[in-house]
Amino acid sequence: MLAAFRAEPQVARAVRDAAAARSEWLGIAAACFLSAALASAAAWWSALRACSGRLGYLETASRYAVGGLVNTFVPARLGDAVRVGLLSRAFEERGRVLTTTGVLAFLGVARAAALMLLVLPAAAAGMLPIRWLAFPGGLAVCAVAVAVGARRRSARRLVVSVPRRLPLDRRFAFTGGGRSSAGSF
Image (tube, rainbow, N blue to C red; front, top):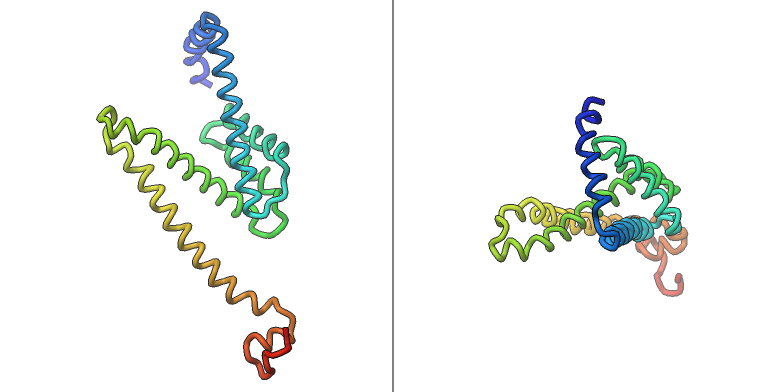
């Protein structure tokens, strides 16, 4: 509450500065802000669909926007927790909150990698210290390593689980359980 009273002069100055700004630049800034929010919602929608989520774009965008609204008024990015809670309803199976949290982590790493690529030319030109690239670069490398490891683990799990899902007569033919494989498929 005390922070709100201390920020009041800064808010008043920001409103004064915005009133003095050129309207065409404010319009451009508003369009860029809206397009960034819609692009972020599209990234969520695409990632959720890649994980077999069943939400439409408008539903995903509205749930993403609610999380953004919560982030505006509540500290510590609790809006991300709201997003995970709302967007996890795209899945029907167990572990849906964990899946949606993984999507949040993936999108965070993708955002860090994109920002690193934006900062890279400035660091290469000597305008920024190269050490500013260490954390996002390390994060991107770790994320790629985790993704490769998870993909290999998922592939092994798929190879083990597919024979269990086959009908009984085909499973015996597949594993060599006493029948000839000729004519069983």
